[in-house]
Amino acid sequence: MIMQKYLYILLAASFIYGCQQPSENQSSTSIIDTLSIAKHIEVLASDDFLGRKPFTEGEVKTLAYLKGEFEKYGLQPGNGDSFFQEVPLVELDCKPSSELIIEGGQEPLSLEWRSEFVSFTERVEEKVTLESSELVFAGFGIVAPEYGWNDYEGLDVEGKTVIVLVNDPGFGSEDSTFFKGETMTYYGRWTYKYEEAARQGAAGIFIVHQTAPAGYPWNVVQNGWSGASLFLDQAEGGYQPAIQGWVTRDAAIKIFEASEVDMRNFVEKARSKDFKPVSLGLTASTFVENGIKKDVSQNVIAKIEGTERPDEVIIYTAHWDHLGVGPVVDGDSIYNGAHDNASGVASMLCIAAAFANQEVKPKRSLVFLAVTAEEQGLLGSKYYSANPVYPTSKTVANINMDGMYYMGLMKDLTVIGYGQSELEDIAGGLAAEQGRYLYPDSEPEKGFFFRSDHFQFAKVGIPAFYAYGAYEAVDGGVAYAKEVRDAYNVEAYHLPADEFTLEETDWKMAGMQQDVELFYELGKVLGNSEDWPEWKEGSEFKSIRDAEMGH
Ligand SMILES: [Zn+2]
Image (tube, rainbow, N blue to C red):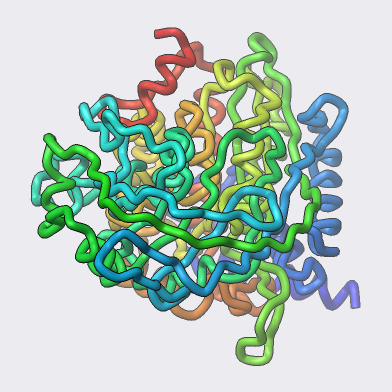
């Protein structure tokens, strides 16, 4: 069996190498080899690892594998004398009331759960109630000092429930300088709206769903917020509104029509600079009951100490978790998560090994952080950024790997969140050395910059970089790359078909190797530099970093 397996690997390896023409700029003495990346992916995405879901046997196996690899390379534990950081999580199985009752109009209104609204709570309590809470329309629910924008201006929302619009005022304005036009800013994300409502002390918040500015239809909201969800168990984690939720656009119009306030053209009004929040003269009542289950998952963390300035760190991240075992699709129930994100973890392991093999280590420290529970809302990275092992002000940059591509050598390096930080300028130079160009995120309206783990670093001000070659393949060009991405999204994204074995794969690994080499070089440049890359002008994270660094 072992011999046979070995033979397969050799055959597969020659297949992987054989199906690509190494370009001039890809040296054969590369310190990153495709077979190592592929072997890690094969292990992590094997059925044996059960889709790597937190709290399962799949977690136990993944943690053991990562710790074992880091130890094998000679890395040090990254959290004191431990390779782990405990991440306390809580599963809240929300059972919302079947109705949201709106009173104060001519007739009381009863909105129906799922078809007209969804609701949940992040409070770790068995029952949370909203009782005759005054309803206020707070525009887009945004406080953005860099745009001179405050939808909560002059409003005390204590005990009140705010209704806010999805996305930011720039979307649909046909003005690329108004916020960022069609490019979604963080202020447009639903997560931001809930966070801001919590900062303001609101009792409740409902986001008005609209398909175009949300980027997805109502059924995504409906399914996403039904049943059990994982949250960070923040016993002292600060204030949370009692009820968070969404209403359909039609339900919002029903509410607005019940109000005596003239709410015609509410989107236009909210987009105006002179917008002021308005009390609707109505109240909202509903409740949520919770099943509560607490458990602890783990981030895995290892480091290579810097030779001159060990307290300054560059943090590589890749989420180790995926979806586990789920509904059967085409006879398979294991959601292996090969691309998402065994590929990122494998890449990070190869980078760690490459640095460990270098005689001369970088001057700054390198940290390798495999985070948990990304799929449930970037929770492992959220926990790390709230409980950093290395001080935020000493963290130079984050380089995140999530979903590495397999289209052979690439001509582009697609930067998610293009224009955000100076890290892309350094990466751009390295990409040019590989004969590649930087390409901006092709769907900036979808806000992908806010949807993987680097974002939790951005949120606390740490310049964060997320990129991959995915736009133009050397062989096959733009059309082939699009075909591969589309096929993945339709056939494999969050499905059991996201799998990988050396003997069956048609993945062309050279592109992944290119990316991994680039991220290795990026870490090396940053690790030996005395510079502190910054957020660019106009970034919503610049003021956070400037305050942190005392600028
Ligand atoms: Zn992912």
